Length: 564
Ligand code: GLC
Ligand code: CA
Image 1 (cartoon, rainbow, N blue to C red):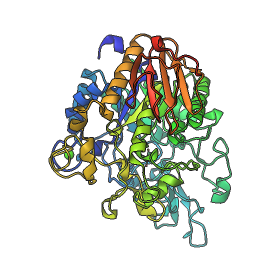
Image 2: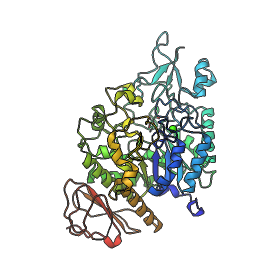
Image 3: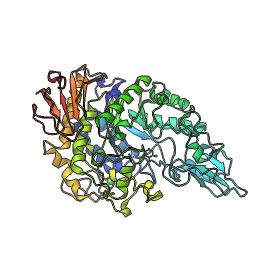
Image 4: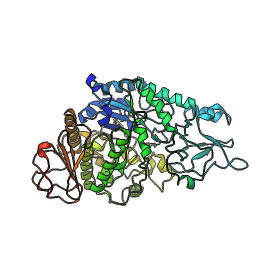
């Protein structure tokens, strides 16, 4: 990386590409993506034009939750590579001018973590147990759980260990929660942050960032807990104690030059408290999933953007935008499903998405063309916004979810906890297609750990590279233009210009960049539209009506006249 790139604020408007390591590229044909696979694709990432990569967990793990059950925070899963491979990846990315975020999972570990194993063999009350959250069972023989709390993946949140005590887990039983009141736990995480920072990692994505501080001494009934707003009174979400934890992390980050950065995974309801995580004293940036949860409509998109803009004002951080990630139905599928009210569910964006996954994509029926058309328009809309944009591997190929994976290949614990409720998130984690040929479309020389459908071939990188209208080429073009504007001094200002009903027109005044989106299902006759277009998500002849569900970019010369 050149010195000029070494500025401390690089993250504020970075385009970050999320890699789910097991499903990106497999270098040795065992069906599992690995670090060497990623190294071999660094030129692809460079050509795509991303500023940073975020690696989902690659640590040793029994894979009860796709690697979010970490057995060793300071090593690489041997199925994915070695620490040497990791160093090679850092070097290759940095050489290409790409920074690296790793995922840090501080709320819970794997039940195979040596400290949890030590806790299990230690007697109740032993210091080894204090690193986790153990509680006596209720009833004369202590056989009843301390409370009726449900875990986020379904099932009870307390699991007995056979001696009258139970341990707490917000997620699967194989993911025991850490006790963040324990000094050893805190210090061990600081060691982990230094370990990866010393190896050249530029930033951290912090999993379940608002749950670390807990008070479970006297658990209330679950029905009552659900009534408590997240915040100081809640037993485990967004308590005040969290500030102190991240202040210690910040001290570590700031010992590096440039300071290491972090982004909090937060699903908090809009709350002024949310800004705390994104200040300079804390993690520095926080995810906003507003856009990901918004239906494809001008009103909801504008509301989401305005929300995020007002929240970042309170923290001094920059905006974050996400349309897809490893936890949600890919946006090309989501936008192909009929609109319904969103219930804000975390694990599938809404009841509709969950029903769609449960019925393997038969109910409601996905409108494939429409989903992709809207996804392309939404992506261009997002990339024109101020702040950083997080892309999820495969969205640049226009990939949809694979809804019809057979039961016997599914891996997600959400499915195993309750198959009648949700088929889980595997549909967005199917390995990428790189070529039309080959046993796993070029993912590796063998089969892939989740089977790819035949339609993946049409989305292969090699196919899309050769098609000027492909989604891959649209992403490349859009990221190139965004870079150009950045070089001209893009800044973070955004202005809404007047737009016709069902459309949005945003302007980045410092560089004269205009983005116009028609969210409606019909072409809009917009006589004032200029003829100097930079890019469009669907073929468009300037001077003709703006096609349905399409975004077009203009530069200042192409300033759109007021709509007539
Ligand atoms: C986060 C991750 C998700 C994981 C969960 C528990 O929300 O994004 O994939 O299952 O945390 O670690
Ligand atoms: Ca492999």
